[in-house]
Image (spheres, rainbow, N blue to C red):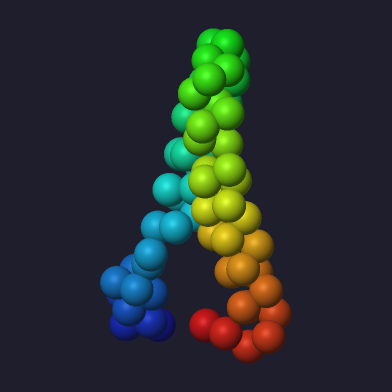
Length: 65
């Protein structure tokens, strides 16, 4: 059991945590009224977040690890 947890931690990619941090940065930019910055960073951040959260759940549904 302990060996499985250790291997699981070693294989962690941190993609969901990075996506969450990027969404927080986007939220701060929107809140502070940085319209030019938001229009520049919204699509890359949303694409990365969708891939990090959405594709991971699809992979798990179809038998991916």
